[in-house]
Length: 321
Ligand SMILES: [Zn+2]
Image (cartoon, rainbow, N blue to C red; front, side, top):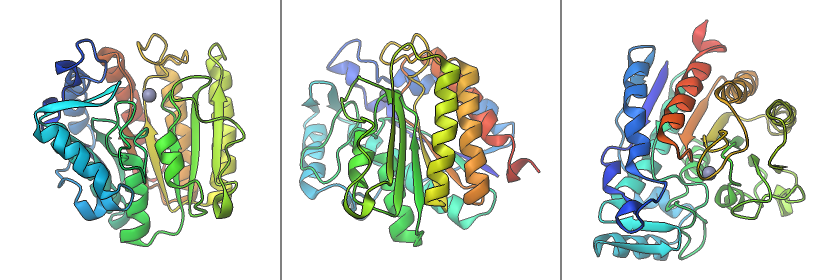
């Protein structure tokens, strides 16, 4: 079974109210509505979920971080930093986005042959854990890292792999597990580029040394080369991690022409990246994948990318047998 989660009320988080032209806008998820409707007639089942609780958020976010963001939102909105703005509904949306990941983890762990896609905003992989004012890069709460932490704490999974192919380095996710040998992290991203981290020599520390793998990728690298490097690295990382669950930060801003990102990828490359993740999830993790939307800033291209992604998630592996 394949499950869809989304953020109801996401449009009340609207950075364009403070920054006209802000790319992380409600139109992104609005463009996905017909995609999800179509998927729901084609083997995907919608699931509702609860917002993330304070206890779940406290695994990675200090109380001061949450209080700061709630104060901004409750005051009608404001800027957390230059790129990151909140409106009155932003924390409801952010808690729902994080909660989708937690509920998706609950579902894929409890049920067999389940993949989940969370069509959520705001995105999460730049939100810095363990920092009192850690919002950054359009991200308020660390959705993917929170999902991984939940799999460990609530379900007792020993080994989780987080894969991130958003065009930007997932600095928040990396920071969450940099010294953790139980949560491995693989990031493919444009480099040098925002947020500046994600060099090849960032490989973890302490007990987590070797559990972080970065694939910094220069603009202009041929897409087939990018996909090939990703496949090879993912297979290596999965062999080392032997994950019981794969969490995916699925950004679509590496698409050629994306107004924020652009690493030259076309829709077929997202199909190939997805297939590679499905392959390792089937080999190691009983097919368990929780995919969370991160970036992707041309709404029409985002809809196209998610369509391809859902088809590739549903294809192959145990689910289609
Ligand atoms: Zn991005």
